[in-house]
Image (cartoon, rainbow, N blue to C red):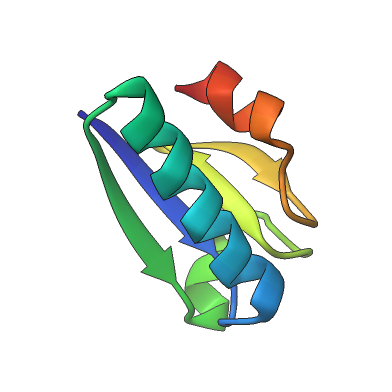
Length: 76
């Protein structure tokens, strides 16, 4: 199971990122645990200054804007 955190304050792009990751994971049959991190100090602890950010298994893989579907597919 991949542990995925979407970092963001709850904006539309953050919600779109969560939906995209869930959709791609379901299509690919990948078991994921998705956590939304909305607390600013927690987000900044990852070094992310532009949201949404995506952290997979403890590693920041994306920050600043909704990732492309192709990018998400590559992560999973």
